Image (cartoon, rainbow, N blue to C red):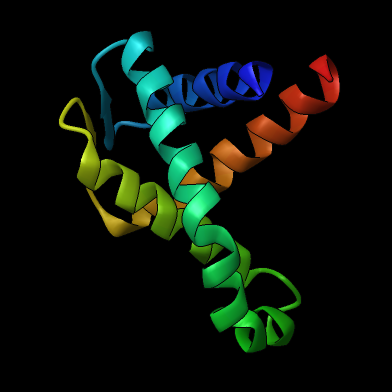
Length: 109
């Protein structure tokens, strides 16, 4: 679990450095963002997937990216030192964070 949080923190930190529309105070803030995102994921993921199942099926799973973007936006609302400027940036960041996290998890797990 700690490894997952660290890998997610690295993903968030990298995306904040790659994209102009994301402001992240420090790597410590990336850790806090990863923790809050994980808690949001823990409590909301299955509820959102359950209600969005028709859209997920119709889009062959691509709608899951929208759910990830929503959870990232929700995380942004909870943390002052983390800011995403637009909906487009949120969606792109969620996609990139997911990809980086998948790669890092494959490498280190």
